Image 1 (cartoon, rainbow, N blue to C red):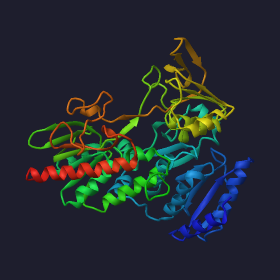
Image 2: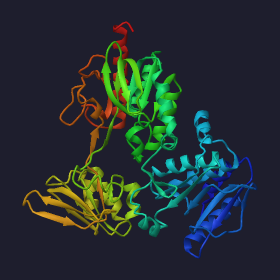
Image 3: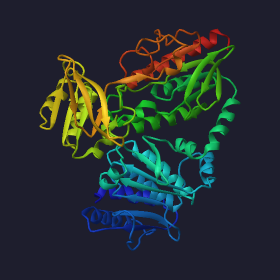
Length: 515
């Protein structure tokens, strides 16, 4: 199962084991069970502190649990955690043994203080780059609190279970048998949902914070760059973000970030956060801005009820996936309507799907999906595809792909539980057509996160914040940078440069104000 290099790396990590642990398998006669058993044997052979227990009967086969010797298992993997989930496996082995998770002490204490019985289940696909964050967060909770258990379930291996529970997007988390959440969630976000009193306490603490010199709203590449440049100037700097890392967290391969030949979004986001934290920057995560106002100071009101104050503001809230805005889209979101082909594609294995959008992202999605599903229909609003020629050539070479141009998607259909098809209109003939598909992947660009600013700053008809060459907005003292603005070419490296530039302009503003 593991090649020599991977074994050597894993053996080095396992030297950090604290207490003896055991691997408890539940196996059937399947090929997957044989592969899992081989993997567990190889892992157990790498360190004397790991024992392979006798197989037991369990709810899911093949699966296995990790437990400290003498304790009841609370961390389980239903499936073979390779691919993106291999890191989740390695961390689980270490943390179950007693190796301390790398989280803030206050978060660890909050987890330990939860008294309710919480049984989490997370459905994943091994190609999903968002899933490991959720799996690892819930494993940490299970490791730190005996009232909590967590099972990772490979949806591709347990397809009948996925079908029975209408799970059509990953990661999909269930708590005590009921739906809990979908998509990427941080440990802090999960805690906020299960610890109801925590949000009120956090809001009270935020409300009491002293005013900042510069408050940056948004924690993506632009916001991170702005924070670093501001902190280096020695001014009191804060960053409030709904999710540190922003849109880049949903990016897979990054091969155009100058001086870094290749990386991925999650890795870049971690590096950004570590860099920002090396300065005296107050990072406030998992908080969404809801209103901007001004008196003698600027006030940023948060959805949690708290208000932060600052002498200057820099908005770097980025953008989100643009939606089709048609009937049925919201009803079947996560039940056929998807936005990440890499994450959710494996759940549609052998089924027919559609892709909306003929740009690079849409064509790339169709190419990737064609290797998994039975058939892909790509719908493009324009009369021709807009993707690069090399991508179009590859797309048209695939036998199970149909391209339809001049197509306006008008409705998503379903049976109340899951999506069953969609309707579109031919813009040339005005004829309506129906496609029987199990899923649709929407790839039609980005929408700036400016809903909370519509009555405050000058925005374009696309919702972008109008800025000048210095990142200044229509309100003195308020600056903006990155994908949320009119700055052309939405690229990570450009967002960083724009963030640095706007931060320097904000510092210049503060100096001239005598701040």
